[in-house]
Amino acid sequence: MDSKYTQLEQIATDIREKNVCPDLAMQATNLVMGDGNLNSDIVFIGEAPGKKEDETGLPFVGAAGKFLNEMLAAAGLERKDVYITNIVKYRPPNNRDPLPEEKAVFWPYLLKQLQIINPKVVITLGRHSMEYFLPGMKIGEIHGQPKRIQFGDHKIVIMPLFHPAAALYNGSLRQTLIDDFLKVPEIIRQLK
Image (cartoon, rainbow, N blue to C red):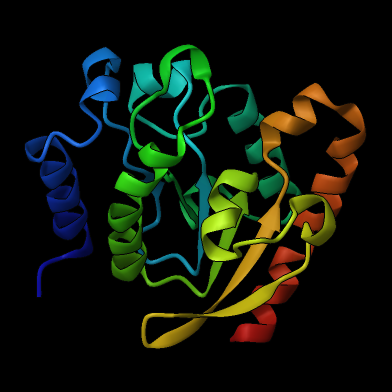
């Protein structure tokens, strides 16, 4: 059995070789696959890389990433304890929202990532990643409420949270996001 690292590298190679989203790829500096612990029980999924992420090739390293790090620390976790990725692996121009067709074409690659890492909990950051796991739901109504869903041949818990960037623009969301986030360690404990 190939190591998880090798399998994830193969996904990146496939994305490049199949020229997924050529318009995005052409203007991006880096393919941003993910970062963190490949054996983690927790995977965070955002929507797409931003400017800093595109420059470094790592997810969540800008202002939203700093806030994510603060929340991890508040929950007694560090980045090295979790795995962080996005649905879309290239930065959309001017940080625009990823288009539905961009998300759709990257979705199978995200599913492969999740199958390799095999987390117990997937924390979606923002509505873009949430809507694939919990279609028809509204993040304003279900944020912070874990949902158990069928994923392949087993069930996983989806925990929808507001995107950290939203809390940076809207101060009132900041405490909501922190409060929701602090439920995560307890959810993990209950699953063990």
